[in-house]
Amino acid sequence: MSFIPSGEVKANDKKNKKADTSAAPTSSIVTQQDDYCAELDGRKIDFGPLVEKTFLVAVNTGDRNKPKLLASTMRGPFEFYEMCEAVGSMFQNEQHHSKVFILEKSFDVGISFLDEGTIDYIEANWQDIVSTGILEQELFGDEEVIPAGTFQLEYNQENKKE
Image (cartoon, rainbow, N blue to C red; front, top):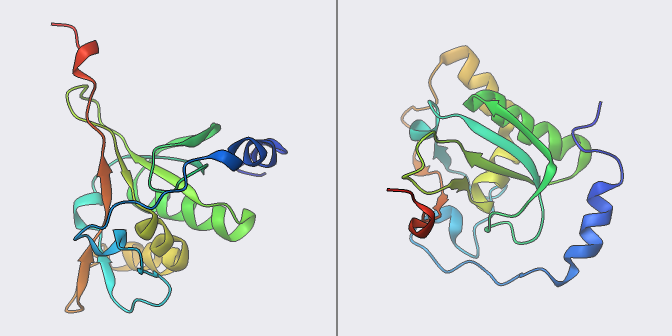
């Protein structure tokens, strides 16, 4: 069973040829730097703040550092290790990048999603992440780790009821 309904991604790719492809601004977060390559960077990412969160996974469309996704492919809620497996298996089996949103119940906080570099890291290392998490219940050791990158969108306060 495929994660993606047949034909929808190809149809949307044709529509998105004029999508915004401008690079995300340079950041102090390693995974958001223009020259970051998850497959070549030897460091591990610190997923500590994300392990207890809940996620929604969908197929990414357009700029990978913006919140656009293919709505008919949304799946969730996932726990952290389930999310890693969904992201990795989607890329491995169907060669599509994921968009991963961090779910919040509060309307007072903005929407957060994982950045391109963090998704690339999960796609490249998902089996190791899941195996380590299941076997050790911990992802941290003496190795150098870098923080996972997320984007925070501001909640539109104009629509907020008082």
